[in-house]
Image (cartoon, rainbow, N blue to C red):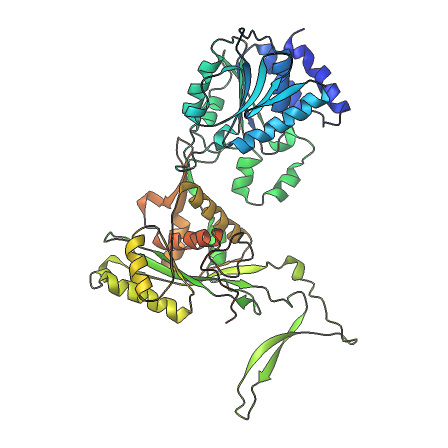
Amino acid sequence: MSILGHLDPMERALIRAGFPAMSAWWRDTLVRFYESGKRQCVLRVGRRGGKSSTLCRVAVLEALFGDHKVPPGDVGVVAIISTTRDEAAQRIRTVRAILDALHVSYRPIDHGIELADRPIAFKTYVASIAGVSGFTAIAVIADEVAKWKDSDTGANPATEVLASLRPTMATQPRARLFLSSSPLGPEDAHARAFAAGETDYQAVAYAPTWVAHPAITEAETHKLEPDDRVWRREYLAEPQAAASAAFEHERVSRAIGLRPPDGHIPCAGVVVVDPTAGSSDTYAFAFARWYIAPAYAQWKTERVWVRNAGDDGAGVWIRQPLNDENGRRIPNPEWGEQPEGFLAIEWAQGIDQAARRGFTSDRIVSRIVGAAREAGAVAIHSDQFERFALDSAIRQHGYPFFPHTWTAPLKERAVERVRGWMRDDVLCLPRHDKLKSELLAFEERIAPSGALTFRGRQGGHDDFAMLVLLAALVDIEGGLPGSPIATTTHRSARSITAV
C-alpha cells in the first residue's frame, strides 16, 4: 500500500482517539500532492488554519508509512524547523500524542523522539544555517517560513536555511519538503516559492483560515484581529505590500488633539529624547505619561466643588459617585467599554539644525532637563545614540537617565503597540504639525530578506514620529509609571502619582 493509502485509516484512528477531523481542504490538498509524486509542497494558509496540527499528522505518516530506505547505522529524520526551539518542540508534543493514539512506541532523544522499532526520529531544529545540516532527512516540515527571523537583525534566513536543508534529502529520493506559512511580504523565500506555482518539482496550495479550518468563521477572524492590514495578511493570507504606511491616516488624525476623559488620573511621566549629532535631523524630545481610570469609574459620578478650609473661597472640583434614593451607588452603563488607560504625549519640542548652531551640547541638555523638571518627569529616556554623553550630562543635573537599544524586533513591537493604541483610541497626541506629518509619512517596508524596516518616506525626517515609538518602547520595557499593560518593572517606574 502506498503512503497515501494509509492517510484515511490513520485519520479514522485519530478521530476515535478524540482528535479533531482533518478538514476537507487539507485532505484534498494532501491527496493531490501525494498523487502528483512531487517532492515539495508550498502551503500558504491563514493563521489558525490547522497548519501545524495537520503537518504533524503528515510527519507521522511519513515516518510510519513512507517508502524510505535508511542505510544501516544511520537514522532517518523527520525534521521540524521553526524560528525557535520552543515553537518546534510544540510540534513534537503533538507528534507524541499522535503516536500514543496509534499505540506506536518511541523513546526520547535530544530535541526529539525516536521510534522504538525502526531507525526513524522526529527532531526539532532552529531556523539557522548552522542548525540544519549533518543529518539524513526523510521529510522536512518547515513551519511558518515567512515569519522566520534572525533575533538580532530581523532578517529572514529562509533562503540560506532551505539551501542547507535540501542536501540532507539528497540520498532519499522519496523525501518530501513541506513549506508552510501564512504570508508576510511578496519577496521572502516562501513568497517566491509560492509565486513559482506548480512545477515538476513542487505543488502549491492556498487557503484563508476559514477554508482550511471551517470551525473558525470569517467573522470570528475579524474579531480576533480588528486591524484590517494585519487581518488580510494573517487570516486572508494575502501578502502585504513591500512598502506601505505604518499608520493609517484616519487613526493618526483621531489621535491628534485627543485628550483623556475627565476624571482619569494622570500618572508620573517621563521625557523621551530622539537625539541627533549635527545632521539635518531635529533634536526632538517629548513628555509622555499614562492617564488611568479612577477606582470609581464603574459608577456614575458628578462634579462637586470642595472648598478649602478658611474663608478665602478657594477650592477644587472633584468627582464623586452618585447614589440612588436608597443610598446605593449607580453603575455606569458605559464602564464596560471604557479603556483602562490613555497614553498621552502631552507636548513635543525640537531643536532644529538652524537653532542648534547657537547651542552647545550642554545647553541642549539643560533645555531638555529644564523641560523635564517643569513637567514633573521622573526620568529621561533616550535611544542608544550618544548614550554615554547624554548619560553623563543628564546625571550631572541630578536626573535619572535610561538609554534603550533599538533592535529590528523591538522596533516592530513598538510599531505594533502604537497601532494598538491608535486602534483602541487610547493614544492622545498634541496638535503638532510636524509630528502629524511624520506619522503619516512613516513607512513599513518588507525587505526581500523578510526583515521589516520602519522609516520616513523616501528618506524624510522621522524625529517626532520616533518619539512616539520610543514612548512605546519605554512602555514595553516597563518604564512608564502606572501603565495598565506593562509586564515588567523598569527602574524608573515609580508608584502612580496623581497630579
